[in-house]
Length: 479
Ligand SMILES: Cc1cc2nc3c(=O)[nH]c(=O)nc-3n(C[C@H](O)[C@H](O)[C@H](O)COP(=O)(O)OP(=O)(O)OC[C@H]3O[C@@H](n4cnc5c(N)ncnc54)[C@H](O)[C@@H]3O)c2cc1C
Image (cartoon, rainbow, N blue to C red; front, side):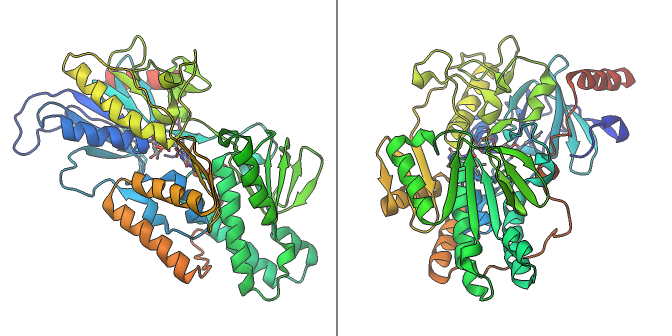
C-alpha cells in the first residue's frame, strides 16, 4: 500500500470470476475475507472445508503471503527463532482453493458492496462481494507525543522484529567501535514502552540477547547496558493478577531491567527520550508497544465503532447490514462468556482464532438461509515467555512460574501453530538455540532505510468514507 490517492493508479474492476476448471458456469455468491491473520485464515480454511465447490467463491485480500504468528515476534527479535518459522504459508496445500489478492483493502463501500484494494504493485482494484468478513487486525496505538512516530520502533510486523534485532546488534557494534564515552553509553541504553505482554516479552527477550551478546565484545563494559521498561499503568500485565505480576517484575528487576510504572514518554528524539517524570535518557532505541487500535480500514466504513473497533453483534454480524461480518482485533465482539453488560472480547489471538472458525459457520448459515449463532469462549489465561527458563503463566487460572510456566508457554504456542511444518521449524529452532546459542549476526538488510513506526504499518494508505464513495461512484459511472 502506498499513497492514499487511488486516482493516481490504474483502476481495475473485477467482475464475477471466470468459472474454474471442471466447475459449472453459474454465478456463485462471492465471499470476500479481508486479512490473513489469526481470524481471517481460520475463517478461510473453515469455508474451504465446509462449503461445496459450487456453493460460493472465496477470495482473500492480504498484503503478505503468510499468516504471522505474532505472539512469537519477540523471539524473532531476539534471534531465538528465524523470521520464516513464524510466517505460516497460505499455500501449503493443493486443497487451498481460495483466490488470493496480494494487496491491502483501503476502503469498503457497504452500499455498493465493493471493496477498494491497493495491490502490492500499487494498482487499484475494485472487488465486488456478496458477503464480506473484515479481519484486518490492528495497528500500534500511538499518542500525540512529539517525535514518537518518527523515532520509535513498533513490534507488530515481521519486518519490524527482524529490523529491531539488527538495530540492537548494530548498537553493540557501534558502541564497541566508538571512542566517545557519551555515544557508547547512549547506544547501550534501550527503552521499551508498554508493560503488557508484548512489551514485557520484548524487553525481556532483547535484554537476554544483549546480555549474551556482550560476552563477544570484550571492549564493552556489560554494566553500561541498561534496559528500561516503562508503563503509565501502576502494574505490569494486570491480567496476571497481583502475585504473578510481582513475580514477573522481580525476575526482570533481578536481571537488571529498570522498571518504571506510572511513567510514560513526554518527548522522543533521535538521540534521547524524555520520560514524563522528567528523566532524559540518551538512547538510540525506543520500542513502543503501548497497545493496539483497530485497523484504519474500519473507519473507511463510516460505521459505529467502540474504541475504534467496529460494533458487531455476538454473531459477529454488523447490525443493519446484510452479509457484513467483522472479528478479531478490528471488531468489538461482545464477550458473552464474561457475563458482564458491555464487555467485549480482548484483542488476543486466542479469541481471533476461535472467532475465525465461528464466523465461517455464521457466513455459511446465512448463505444457506439458516440462523447465525453467538460466539462465546471462556478465556484460557495468559502465557508469558521472559526468555531462557524465565516465564510466568496462568493457564486456566493456575499460577505457574519458572520451568513449568515456560513449558506451558512454549507448549501452548507450539500447539497453536497452524501447520505441522511450522511446528517442526519452531521446535527445531528452539532446540538449536538451547544447544548452540546465537551467533548475533547483523544481516544489514535495509540498514540505510528509515524504519520507524510510521514507515512499517502503512496507516496513511486508507481512504476516507467520502473518498470511498466518490471512487466507487466514479468507477460505476464509467461502466
Ligand atoms: C508482540 C505481540 C505478542 C502477542 N502475544 C499474544 C499472546 O501471547 N497471546 C494472544 O492471545 N495474543 C497475543 N498477541 C495479540 C494477537 O497477536 C492478536 O490479538 C491477533 O493477532 C489478532 O488477530 P487478527 O486476526 O484480528 O489480526 P492479525 O493476526 O494481526 O491479522 C491481521 C491480518 O490482516 C492483514 N491486514 C492488515 N491490514 C489489511 C488491509 N487493509 N487489507 C488486507 N489485509 C490487511 C495483516 O497483514 C494481517 O495478516 C500478541 C501481539 C503482539 C504484537
